[in-house]
Structure formats: C-alpha cells, structure tokens
Image (cartoon, rainbow, N blue to C red; front, side):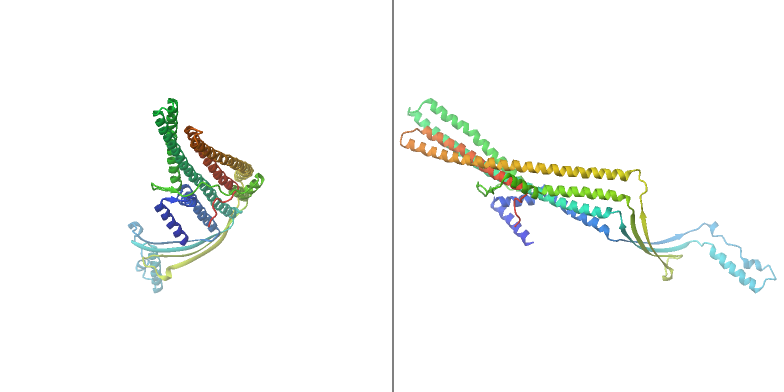
Length: 464
C-alpha cells in the first residue's frame, strides 16, 4: 500500500511540474495504457478460471427443500354417503351385539375411505445431496493442467506486451527530444540566414556585393523557412503521440532527459542469439502452448475410459392431512451410490477427436521451431542495426568535429580579412546540417540498443 501511495504522489508531482523523465513516462504508460490494462484483466480472469476448474475436484454439496400447503374441494359425487351396515342390522331381529360391533367397525373403515371435502394437506421436504467425481478418464486432471498453463500464458503475454510498451514509449520519448533539437537547430539556422541576409542587403546598398549575392541570401532564407515549419509540425505530432502513449491529458509537458549514448555491452551475434533463445518470453509461451496441445491430446485419448462418480443424499420429508405438521409426521431417507458411464460406440467421434488433437499437437511443434528461427533472425537484424548505428555515430561525431573546425577557420579567415562572410555563413549552415545528422545518429543508437535488449529477452526496466 505504501509503494502505491508513493507512486501516486510521484505521478501527482509529475503532472504539477509538467516535466517527466523516461522512467516516469514508462511508469505512466504502464498504468494508463488501455491494451496493457485489458491484458491485466485477462490475467485475473485466467486466475479465477483456474480456481473455478480446480474446485471441481472437491465434493459438490447442494441443499434442496420445499414446503407446501394445499386445500382440495371434491365434487359431491366423490363424497356421497355409503350405506350403513349397522342400519341394515336393525331389520334383522337375530343380530347380536357382536354383529353390531363388527358392523360399526365396518362403517368406520368405509367412512375413512371416503374423501372429505374440503381436504387440507401440508407437506415439507428437504434433501442434502453430495456428488463427488472419482474418475473421469483423466479429463478433469488434464483440464486443470490446461487451465493452469493458460493462466501462465496470460501472465507471460502481459510481460510481452509490457516490454513492447516500454520499447515504444522509449522510442516516442526520444523522438520528442530529437524533434525538439531539430526545431532548435532549424530555428538557429534560419536566424543565421536572416542575419546573413541583413548584412548582404546592407553591403549591397553600399555597392560592395552583387545582386546575385543578395538573391542567394534570400533563397537561403526562403529554403530554411519551410524546414522550420516542418520541424515544428513534426515536434507537435511527436508530442501528441507521446502524450497519448503515456495517457497525459494536460497541455504543457516537458521532457527531462538528454541525448546521451547508453552503455553498450560488447556482444557477438552468436552470444546474442544464445541469450535470446534462452530468455525470450515468446519461446516460453510456445512451450506452454505445445504442452497444452499435448494435454488436450491426452484428454481426448482418455475419452475411451469410464467416468465414475459417487453420489449420496439425506432427505427429510413429511406429509400431513392437515395444515399443522406434527413432529411425528416426519420421515427420513438416506441413499448412497456409485455410477459409471462407459462409451461403447460413438460413431467414430472419439477417434476423429483424437486425430484432430494429434494434428494440433504436430502443428504447435512446427510453430515452435518456426518461431525459434524467426527470433534468431530478429536478433541478427537488431544486432546488425546496432552495429550500423554505432558506426554511423562515429562517422557523424567525426563530421561534427570537422564542421566545428571548419567554422572556426572560416571565422578566423574572416576576422583576418582573408576570407569573406559568405564562407562563415556556409560553414554555419553546414554545421547545422551535420548536427541534425549527429543527433539522428544518437537516436538510432539509443533505439537500436533498446531493441536488441528486448530481442535477447532482457527486461528493459528492472523492477525496483
């Protein structure tokens, strides 16, 4: 709870200051990205599904009950009086007392057999039932294993998407920084061109330069103005994409960070591919997916085995010929039994299902090998891109040094009246152009290094 409170307060601080670092940007993206949040919900669903299926191993108890009252009105034809045996004996002078006793008994029995109307009845029943699976041919155990593997897949899928989100957030972060530097360089170049145009126009008014020099200076300004507008537009687009990535809804946002080269670990292509094939989460996902297909194949083969279950119940019931139920009206019933079901012939359905599962298993193994080859290719491409980016950076760094020295010499020549102002202006424009390429080279190195780190299966951000 304390950790979440610290994170929340830090986010509030970031929003109030309007300046965030790369790590803070990644943390915001992880908490606000809708796709990643939906994947987290899938992880929770898979965990609940695993617990649900696992609960099938436990006994299942259910309690059922019913209480009812009924009043029945019978037709007169059903409630008509029966002839009295005792009344018949009155016409027999030879009837004895014993005969009258027997006749009275018969009259009572016959009277009890005749329904009365209305008839009141009350009933109460309650049953506690227990069902326990004993054996399902391995289908239940295999089902639990499959759900457990599915839960692992969801967790690993979350990690894959999280790493992809971190990489894309890093790229957008440095795209904004690069776009910001491009805007500044283009603005500086335009300002330099405008100052040069002002000097050339002043010299032209004094007759020291030709009309061609003025026209050229104006064309330089005209050429740089659209570049400034394009750079500003690219910066705006990059910032909008970055805000959407991290879920920032404010207006003003500043990024805190510099264009510095990350530490580059020396690693051969063979070492990188070995690390990738060992650490890539995608390969672990495919291992689990193949295992699930194996479990499914085993489960289908288990359909030929019998299903056995235990069932037991205890019931309490009563039926009274009046609304009031007395304690002597209750009865009980107990039962326990074991049942089984064994398929004899299913129209070759089980055979075809087993064949279907076997083909899916073979397909999963082929996909696993294909993905290994694709991952090896991905690592090779990422490794080569990083090498090329480092080589390009060294070239651009050398160009920066040469262009800076060229500008210094041009200024010295102009101050000593050996060179002209145009040479200084050309050197400044050349330095601006090379600075753009230099910062682009740094961006390529940063992105390529992060991409290779992800390709070999290392976490882009280690949890603190």
